[in-house]
Length: 145
Image (cartoon, rainbow, N blue to C red; front, side, top):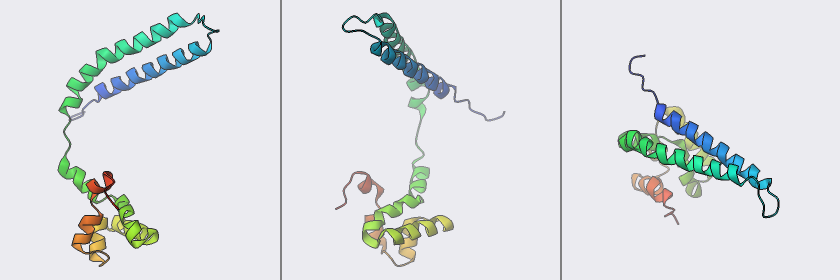
C-alpha cells in the first residue's frame, strides 16, 4: 500500500509489555503459592523478573532511538485541536454556570468554532476575559483562584 507506515516498533513494544505483565502475573501467583519462608516457587519468580528486565533493557533503547527520538509535535495542529476542544467550556463554568457552559460547548462544537470565539461572539466574555479564563496552560498548572 503506497505511503503506508507500519507501526512495528510500537506493536513490538506492546508485545514486550504484554509479556512483562504475564511475567508479573506469574510472580504474583508464585508468591501466593509459597509456604512460610520456604517458597519453592522462587526459581520461577526470579526467572520471570530477570526475563522482564532483559526484554526491557534490550528493547527500550531501540524503541527510543528509532521511534521516540524522531517524534515531533505539530504545535500549530495541537493548538488548533486544543482551541476547538469543547471541554474548554469547563473553565467557564465557575463564571457562567455549568448549564450555560455546557450549552456553549455544544453550540461551539456544532458550528466548528472554539468555545472562546463563541463566548466572545455572544458577548458573554470580552477578548481579554476569554484569553484570561480560557488559558489552557494556566488551567493545567492549577493557577486559577
